[in-house]
Image (cartoon, rainbow, N blue to C red; front, side, top):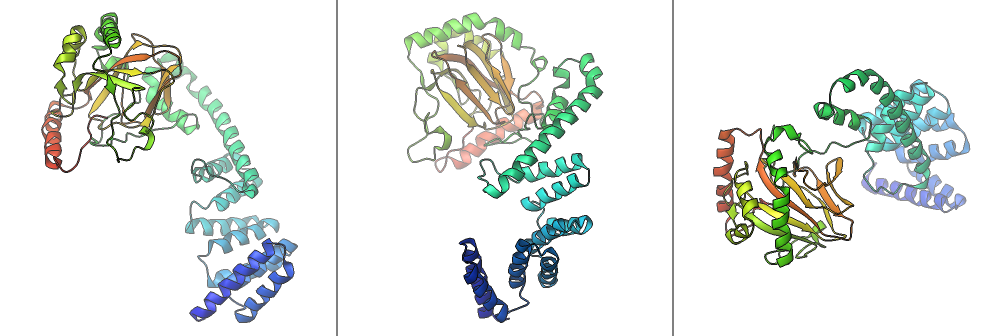
Length: 431
């Protein structure tokens, strides 16, 4: 068939489809008849006539035309899903399964094929296998997808199938591991418990996504176990003195500045509301590896304590330490930090109710004097939904799994990267 004929056939079929959708049956039939006269064995023509037969209830006739079309166009997924539909109506389960498998070999994430495969498994009395396929189907839907009306009932059924299966599986797992959970405290089970929760659809697993330097093969926790940091107790014991110094800074209101300061013309994305705003302000004690002398003189107890801790030291980048002030109603949007070679510490100082913090799949409320350590290269965000200021001390420390040689290598390499791009572009290492 020549190219003009192919264009003609496609145009006639498209016009026929539009006419049929508008309820113009006679016009649709005329257009399809013209296409049949020009190319009676064309796969698109056979498919269009097969759809008419299926809609009229002639499943056997529709099946025959679709199988004929597939012999000349075996990679056409529309033909395969239509054939599977005909075979479903004919209750030919094995043939339907073969058609769906042929389609999924061509397009493994084909939503309609996955939904129909799961329904077929249900018909065969395999609800658990069906739920697994429904899960795969739902994974193909991006967040916020607007579904056509024709699919909403099927998608709702898929969600319900997955939900029921997860509940039943959770019951079985809970029974099997009850003794282990009774024998071991929560922190000791943390990683596997997170994995089981993700398997059951109750939590997500957020991978580290550093915006600058990613050191591979480092352990990554959303919130780290306290026992890995023996200096946390000393830090927390100093909370009253550190809080006093922070409150003095707040009363004087000198040295506080917006944390987000993107230059004009740069893409702001989620930072538009906070850019150059005091809704999220900071008072730096160390900034990009440099001690801010005028500020540390005003906070001598805090500065002395920080100097004794294993803060990350990379010239031009770290340590960074500051009082972080979040105004009433402010929200720090989800974002990821620069490098997983260091971790971030929060010491809550002034915490009104409804102040919370999310790292990955876990959300916590700050409690005054209770510090935590987290990986800020995992997506995180913060809220102050109260009518009062929230104040915490934030600083970075070396990742405890880095050995001395790795720390020295980072200390030497990162400034070289910054120097290489100096004057031409900015290399972010502190956000």
